[in-house]
Length: 460
Image 1 (cartoon, rainbow, N blue to C red):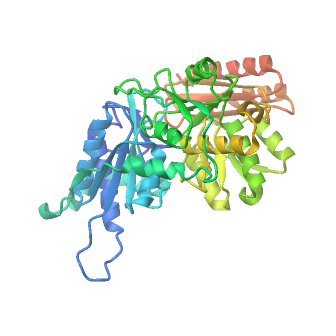
Image 2: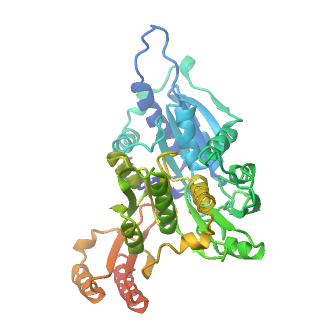
Image 3: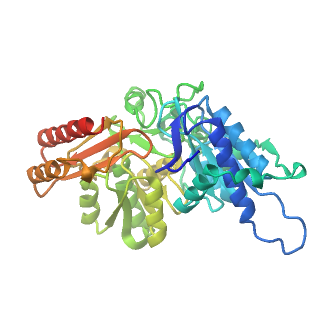
């Protein structure tokens, strides 16, 4: 069977127990990755027997995580690879621990912000960064062939799986160390929404141990309620709590805690673009914004460019996905990047988006400036923006759809100089995303609806 294309923009993702998120494919992925790790081991100069490679596997709180965890472990073990299971942990925690524990790879079982019905597999290398596309391609080729059976380990070389107890503690200490040592969160009242996900244990500990008074919601996972009306995709509950408890700030993370959306003391949402603005200006003040540049994506509001340009900071845009943002940052030695959706990457500290670390950086800016989050939030003014996600049946080359190019050209002419249209397929769901930005909200809403309706008909 051919498995080409099972990797999307952020690993493998799909409905649990349905292709490609089945136990069988998870086992094959473990075998393929295990084979690559064994093959690429450096020779042992001492002449002693080569130690077995070791991988970490973490997960969020979805019911199907148990199934995928065991299947992956079996695949790795069959190739002679040791497995350490961390239990529920944020995605960035696995990126950190892969380095910290000298693992050969780190695996996260999560569908991030999706509902419990879905699950996914994200793979990190020993450097803590997500594996390159070339390795994903090789994994797809291996599981599509019959070669894996010939690479299975001998009976006396099968790997072992064990659970480790101190993974959460290691991540908590790491995250706290990203906050300035001369500051505390004493006097800060904080609403924290953990999305009933992978950060439900560690996130409260991080902020409480730094001195904040933490009001916690979304921390009672049951396998089914991850991201359900809570977390970064549903910040309204945290907003209500901020106002109710007169909190200074709200922090909402998603199911695997790699993204964050914040709430100011007035109950207003502070999205990823505003968080990037606050962090960029703070880092520049400290002299730590390398190359005076921030990396954003095509989905970021043009208001981000405006405010950063006024402060002599450059903005470089990439395609959508935190992996693409990280690649651009590594390529040109930048330290700050992210997405409007809340993936914020601080390469000074982490190798991927980290909701807790980003939240701590904003709190550090508040403490250092003595300003409330509402004042920092107002530093950036949003250009009106409309995003419509349309469910589709087929993904065709957009430029080859009859009438698409002329409709797009006509829409762009109506927007004028201070507007833009960005259309793309989701890499994780059967959706086409239509983003329209401009000065007149009524006009851009109409244009977005026309484009979305057109594509819904053509791609159904």
